[in-house]
Amino acid sequence: MRFTLLTIALINILVTNLCAITLEEAIRSALKTHPEVEIARLNHDISGKEVQSARSNLYPHIELNAEYYPTKTFVMPSNGVFSTRHDDAVHADISATYTVYDFGRTQERLKASASASLGAKEQSRYHQEVVIEQVVQNYYTAAYLNRLTQTAEATSRYYEKLYQKALHMRQNGLKTQADESRFKASWLEAQDLLHSKRTEYRKSLYALEHLIGERVESIDGNELDRAVEEKRIPSIESMQEELLQKSPELKRLEAALAQARSNYNASKTLGYGTLSAVAGYGVDRSLSSYDSSYVGLKGNLPLFDGGYLDAQMQKSALSVQIAQQEYENTKKQLFEELFNAASDHEQAIQSIEAKRGLIDALEQTLHLMEGRYTQGLATYVDVLEAQNALDNAKNGLSWAKLTKIVRFARIERLLNKGCIDEICR
Image (tube, rainbow, N blue to C red):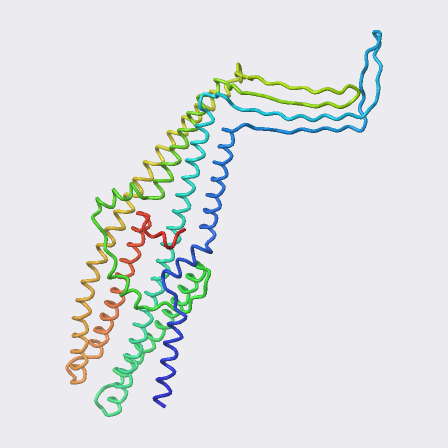
């Protein structure tokens, strides 16, 4: 019988491990299926087409036109009298236009579209970083809740053991009904807490499944221990410098500022006109057949537009100022977010060390209280208080580990480190 139970337990462990998903697998799955990531990628592709469209203005534009009329009215003058005739007609021509000089307007528009494409690329990177952070948070939250479930299971078994012991001692006249009833109440309360933690754990798994688009059977609570030892951060000053250089949010705003400046430079040349080279060749076949051609230069200069061009230039200038202020405002917000995350990370490290020492002391206290209770030197209240304090310390340690991991993920997102090249393509 014991062999059968052991075999079943081993099979369950193997199945759980086979069904468990690693953090890297979860991240890869989320980046492949998450709508925000896909939308950002598509927007980046669109911006690339915008660059291609703007670059096309650097080349000649050639058009071919053709017309055919089965019947067409022709007016023929004869001796001062106009007469009409009906006949078919065919016309075909090819024309070419090339912008010779527009005071750099086309080049500035090309720069603006290139900056917009760079901004879209950084925006795509930002969304990837955000999704990675969400996966890390959900993944380790599930591990944290699994750890709380394990603690609740151990507590429930412990209270059941105390209840059975108190029942046996009462039947032998060594303890009172109060001892038995209080331990039973604690056991039932622990069972209720266990059911609650299991429900929260299942909810966290569902949230992770919804995020990555893949079935998740379980997340091992020991993931908290494996991950927490790896999280180290440099000084806040060096991270601030790194943030200025690598943050996709700031890079996107830098690109937006460059785009606004290019648009402003282009708007300043709108009033100067354009010089174009034109050429064409045409063929007409009707009552009178002939060929025609032309080659030359064409210029246009706006004289009056009701203030439209001036308004466009002022609008572009204001857009530059807005882009500058958005960059400065976002930089301040990111600095504050980075400082808060680093502070919470450091606090979590200190809390982990304190909770570990507290757990060691409380385990010794609980062991002492159990012995004193058996000898009649302590009450059931002392045992319950010691166990409750130990549970709180263990849960507090798990929470500190989760906080450290989550804050580290936030720092990596801010510094553009979560989306490594092996994962983000």
